[in-house]
Image (cartoon, rainbow, N blue to C red; front, side, top):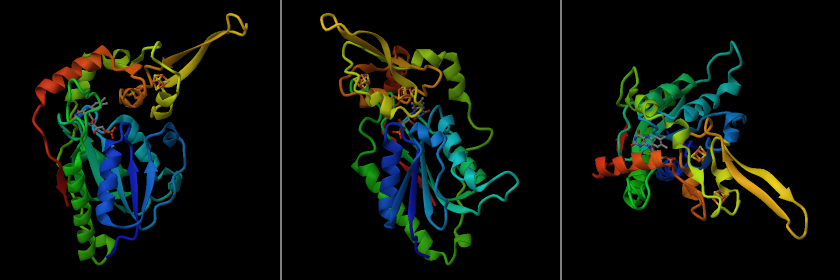
Length: 296
Ligand SMILES: Cc1cc2nc3c(=O)[nH]c(=O)nc-3n(C[C@H](O)[C@H](O)[C@H](O)COP(=O)(O)O)c2cc1C
Ligand code: SF4
Ligand code: SF4
């Protein structure tokens, strides 16, 4: 069987998961279409129907699990096809991928397999890849700069193996399914930690207004629309005219992905002390390079 088309579906606030999925698709060597689940619009938009393409679904690991926001958006992918009482869509072959920042992926890959299966996909291959930790900073790096050329070469080779797996099967039903490593009930260890640390508002990035040009990049890259440029005050007088705008962040919407910090062109957007403390622990605790794992 030949793979006619590939759909790369990613939730990827800092871009690593998307990069890995694209490299896998390159190895498959079929026409590629992308569905980006990262922008806030993915919470409401309608997605195109799935026919006979292979999908690659790639997400980061947050606290050893699939980020809640990613799970919500993946569950919406096929919901339009499934009005109340209707049959589930037929099984669509899927490559499931999680990326993590050199600590651990715990049960995230297993959980992703469950989530995609719930909404009509069936995992026929699974991969775990390393990406720069969202909290990583050059002074205290964790997997900084990953996925690197070696990681992307492995992702591409994995894509080629998936193509070979297809070539050996005569029809979709005969593609063997993968059981990713992991277990249920899913690990809660890190989620418990997050509560203990009182992460919430304390973990949200802040803005150094003196350095901020109000360019709006952070607003554009925020996956949950947590950031607004707020008009605070103005005085139209030509002599003392001013227009005061400040960056405001909704702590309840922030998922601490650090996309705003990593994309801010002036360095005005900064990680919280709480996140930098975590990063210091990560930097000391996980210095050894981990390598990708693939399952077919
Ligand atoms: C809130 C949060 C929790 C995270 N938890 C973990 C974790 O449990 N283990 C780990 O190794 N990396 C963890 N990471 C790092 C991300 O998994 C890693 O940086 C990921 O590859 C980023 O993907 P992206 O570039 O597609 O956004 C976490 C990142 C964030 C923002
Ligand atoms: S990206 Fe940086 S400079 Fe631009 S508005 Fe946001 S905080 Fe300000
Ligand atoms: S405000 Fe929070 S959710 Fe939005 S980009 Fe920044 S860290 Fe991510």
